[in-house]
Image 1 (cartoon, helix red, strand yellow):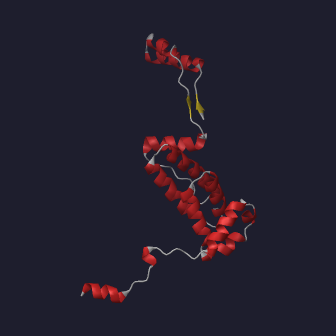
Image 2 (image 1 turned 90 degrees about the vertical axis):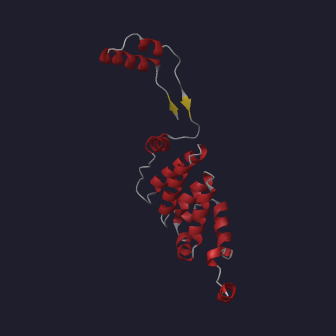
Length: 182
């Protein structure tokens, strides 16, 4: 995204300021300096606007939850937050995206996360897909047929693996707890 004003635009603004606010010849001097051009690689206008809004307000105006285009927009903002190392913005985007993933958008979000190399989001989507209550519905969707073959393989392999047990999932051995307390 390029943010550039032409020399003519700056001179016109300077003339308008000097006429309206009584500023003297100082305006002419600033217009003679070289223009500043800022190029930000891999940044579209709309995600960059959201990032700038966050920088000025420390807030994100969240779009509608669950709508695919809005989730994809926040994914682009998340990618920018990662690039600029804005941890609070990263957290806000991640919370929004994870809360917005549903049966209607999970495959599109997963494919986009894979393309943008957003591994944490891709992981969230894969876990969503292989849940017992979601899996059959997701694989019967038309979008599933259009997924990249690498993602299809990942989903099938993940479904075949037994679920990993977290510490909180481990059964509690009551005898050991009571023997420890005695």
